[in-house]
Amino acid sequence: MGKRKSDVVDPDVEEVSKKIKTTSVSRPSSAAYTPQQKNCINEFVGVTQTDKTTAARLLKQHNWATGAAINTFFANQSGAPNPNRAPLNRIFDNYRENANEEPDQIGMEGTAKLAEDLNVNLEDIGALVLFEIVQSPSLGLLTREGFVDGWIEFGVDSLAKMRNAVLQRRSQLAADRELFKSVYNHTFSLALAERQKALAPDTAFDFWQVLFGPTGLEWRTAQTNWLEKWKEFYTTKINKAVNKDLWKQTLTFALETLKDDSLSFWTEESSWPSVIDEFVEWMKEDRAANGEDRMQIP
Image 1 (tube, helix red, strand yellow):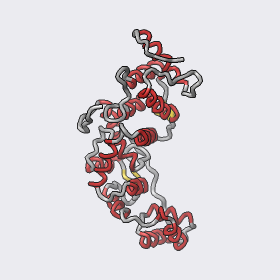
Image 2 (cartoon, rainbow, N blue to C red; image 1 turned 60 degrees about the vertical axis):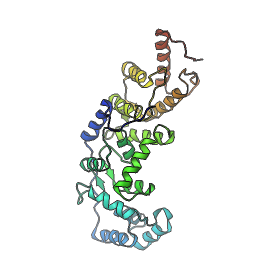
Image 3 (cartoon, helix red, strand yellow; image 1 turned 45 degrees about the vertical axis):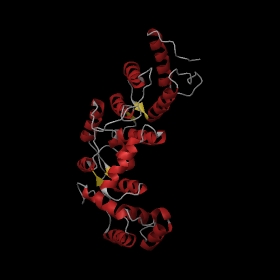
Image 4 (cartoon, rainbow, N blue to C red; image 1 turned 180 degrees about the vertical axis):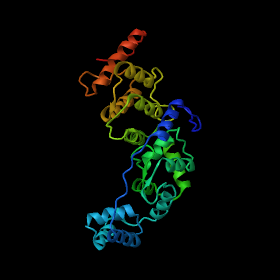
């Protein structure tokens, strides 16, 4: 695979960018706390130097007993103060649109500004890498917990370090299959419309063409453009919503085809989804019609 350039805009990636910029996100309103509970949160934050989301979560677990919640915080190594937490919270605060009503959320405008400041093009797979790092629950929405905890795992405390982390992670996608799988699986949840459990075919392929395109893990071999064949088959023969299982199994199947273009790994006894079984049969007929005989299917 040749060297990739982040400034090349693929039309399919551009379509994903449009979805990111235009998708309406429904956000829950912030929790209403009593004056006493607010005092507990402020006391907890003052002692632990953590964020208010973590404070509220632990206080609720301990029925708003501040002392017990603080003891649990310090007893849990994963909850111990991290020097990067405070600067990350400050960075998060800078991108909020509605600090009073939604103090722990960044919406679409803030997300776009953050991406711009990180030199992450929303028309590039780097955006999906960024959203996976911060565990964005949906397009155009970031939570404080996902943002802070996500970046703490990378040991970063500044925009410059975030930028480098995204670039490095993006450059490793094709070679690191576990990393690609993580970004790929998170993208399904990211792309889901509100209250939906499956992706519309056009949405699924918008993201597949980014993930399986030249800037991701390219789904093609010297003999076969698998992504093109998959799209031709699915849109003409199936054209149904893509659920989570099919989304995941498509990646598993893609990885197998990259190792074995002949499809000899497939058998009738294999536990592939029926759609993939149908695709194999379709490929068999397609190759036969084109005079290709390299297919080795039992």
